[in-house]
Image 1 (cartoon, one colour):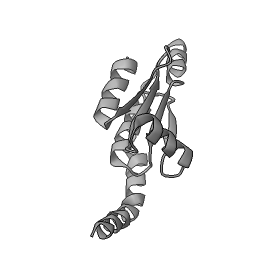
Image 2: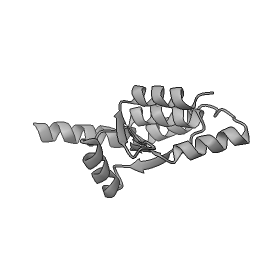
Image 3: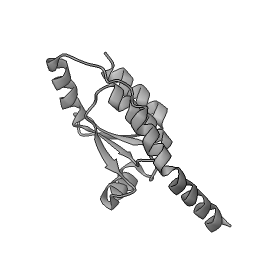
Image 4: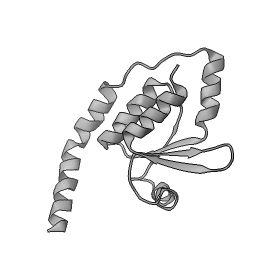
Length: 129
């Protein structure tokens, strides 16, 4: 029974994939603008951030839209296509669940933040003008 359910959701995901990708592309918000100095500071701070995601996850799309709106150059790791990224997420974060934001702090600590709403709140609090 478990295999049937898993197969059903895989098939459903495959059928909805093109629509999800079109929605993600069409519904991107307009990015904010910053002066050159502020954007350079943001770019520097974003070097320590990586979003673990996959393209058709609706929660990942939600986070990527916020990243686009805030004009953040955050690195993306696709855990569906990159086995190394998947292993790093599982080892570092403790579970393979997306979206997950990896935050590398200045003191060497690494924080793994799950839940799209928490990630968006963190990004707004840290980077919104």
